[in-house]
Length: 128
Image (cartoon, rainbow, N blue to C red; front, side, top):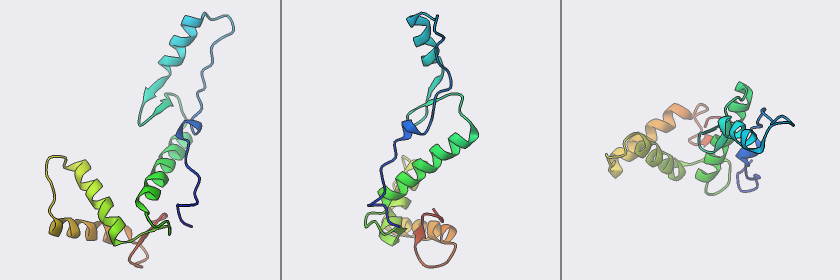
C-alpha cells in the first residue's frame, strides 16, 4: 500500500482535550483554563492525554514522514529515498557537521541494515 493514496493526517484531530470550562466560569477564566492545558510539541496537544493517544499521535507523525520520504508512493523506501532519510537523520543529530557523499552512503547502508528486517533491500512501513 503506497502513500500517494493515503489520506493526510490531521494531528489536531488525534488528541482530544479533556478539560471543558464550567458553565458558570467567566470567559477569562475559561480561556486561562484552556491555555493552561495545552503544550507545544510539534503542534498543540492536550497536556493530559492518555498513553494510547500519544502512541496514536506519534504513529501518525511517523506515517506522515514515511509518506513524505516515499516519493514514488510504492510503500517502500529504496536506496534513493533512504539516502534522504540518512541526510535528515544525520543533520538532525549533527547540525554543524556536514556529511560528505561517501560517508553518507555508508551511513545510509548502516540505517538500511538495521531496519531491513526481511532483507529485501527496501524499508517498508512496518520496518520503518
